Length: 369
Ligand SMILES: [Zn+2]
Image (cartoon, rainbow, N blue to C red; front, side, top):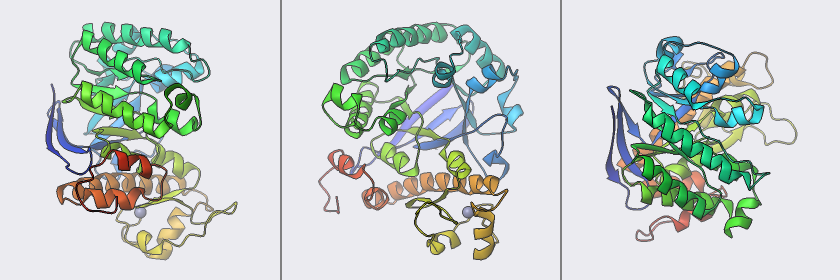
């Protein structure tokens, strides 16, 4: 039902290329899943080919929806992963049982269902032991009763020991074909100086890299997913560290606050406010082949994507989703053409990730690292 094969490992970074095969559908990895809402558009696959979509059971539970086939409901042909919504359910204090979630998965038939996990609360460190106990007991129950659904267990940990213990306990239940790492990126994003550094004596980005290397070591042939990546640069970092798969809803969230994505640079605004830099990236915008920009003059493109104009969210979101997916393909291309290290250097050199990445890449080749 699920097959994952690594086809090539990069010699200069920890990245690897592979093929994930599931329910007769195939996708090249590392891969980005576009996080989408069930009830709100845009749905990028209405505009261009999208092979991997992530949705959240939280929406089904909260809105009391009943979905018989997620592929039909969304009118999507690609691979659909459904997250359990553990994080959102915790925030809203909505109780959900693994039985209910399994019922939802059995009816909606996503290609991958994520095990009901209980993400940790950074404000209450001690509770993490109890929360992990619940996650592992859900994992056991759901795997035993999954029938035909491909389930992805999720690892959580605030310390290296937590993570090692979590891997061990998952192995006692099963040797998974797929495994996720939960709330790692959001933790790093929101807890910059934080609890994690105090607990581990290393900065949060180093911790993130370390967690990934431990899970890769514990499950070397397993398809490794990291949940909740915010930006294109975080995606590139994850891929370089050996992660096979990430998901992001940022294409949509960034569009909602007016930001435009373009290859190799951070957020830009056609009409910047609050002292933000003036939009100058005309060359990059001119080169965009997204369904919104295609066939338009530069002036028309600017108009369509302008954050100061009413009704541009939808178009910006499609453009952003397309750029995210193009960057995934650019990563594959750099890997296959053997210039991955230079590609990553260019993409990450202005970010806080760069220093950390250097420690995880090979020094053999003379390069700008
Ligand atoms: Zn575009």
